[in-house]
Length: 337
Image (cartoon, rainbow, N blue to C red; front, side, top):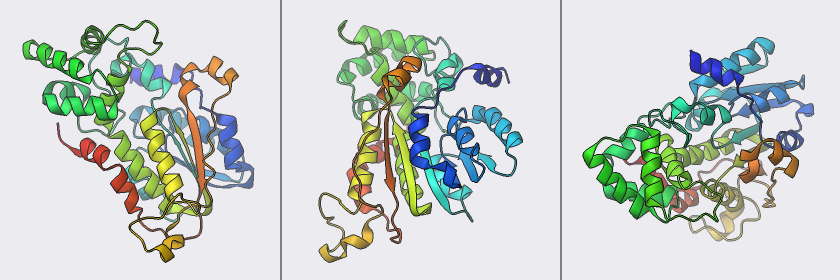
């Protein structure tokens, strides 16, 4: 219970809120699916428009306290479910969805609660779970073999010094199990070449990789994108805010490859049958980023990218190219510790 109280006291800034509202156009009303409820910033803003209804979900149980506040304020227009992206279709039955919103990455509540193990400054247990996970970071660090750990750091973290970091992790854990965040931080810092010209923390990529594996983040995004496209009504929008290159790569491919102006034809469908397999209207490949004033108020927003696409009226067809393109990431995240 104390963790929940702490999270309510931490100030949360929904990234690019004004731009999200501009694209969503809630003044027109409609049903909105907020897939990353967090502190409720987007949901609360949308609900201020009287003709809207919001269905929110979040895998993190600590967001429930924020959801209760909105439920009390908007009992007939707001509902909340502790679910992952892969289950979003289970909460939308019977609803025509106008807009789906994803705000990826860590929330300020997760990062600043040191007991959860996301912060480099923590001396607590290696957890890194966003909720509804099967393994912890401690299990991954101590129980994955050397080859598997290298793959996780190289593929999910894009860490160039993965070999050295993993070699030292293996050495350390042979003597003593790695159970605390500060133990892992010390191993990484000793392993990395010192480059004081870089502003990024030396632990960033390793922590990102372990966290992504624990939470199956790319797999959940993959499933979420497909299911969002499936449940959206014609003219509905998918808005996604991402924070690192792998997420953005997946989003860009999905919007580009299944829009009416796709750059090339698919090998899975006949040339004359392409138009029936488009899921989106013409995609403009436009990226929105936070303003300098927003970054000054909320520094973690500096790496955020917002993309959106508009669903067409075509019948949903499973995008097979999507699976092929991201096979190595999906297979890695689906493998066992």
